Image (tube, rainbow, N blue to C red; front, side, top):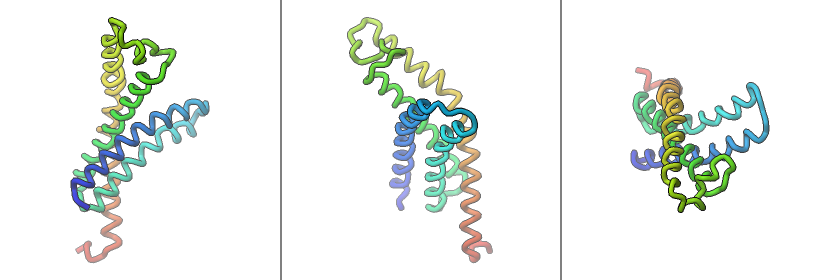
Length: 162
């Protein structure tokens, strides 16, 4: 598989996952789960795109450091896509909490200011903690996963051990 096709697949998986997870999380909240089951169902799916990307990259011959960078980028793009999905949902579907941000209020003289403030809160204020997690957690998990997959591939093929 060419590097460009692999890169496009990685970006597409990350962006699609962010959009899907926004709706998944909304549905999960409506179930009113708590405890360990909630955390498993809420945060466990974030391992899926990371796992896919690292497996693809490792099997394509990428070194562990490159897999780590792709893992970080995957989570960062998924987070940005997740927040963008929230933003689009608020623009299109009226919400009681952010009714002034709905597109039907575009003629309001403060509409752009409110929209800008919301974007700042969403992508900067709320996003910073998740960007840190993507860099640290995504980097560590993807590096470990890449090393593990490389080790598995080498142990299956004994001629590569020498």
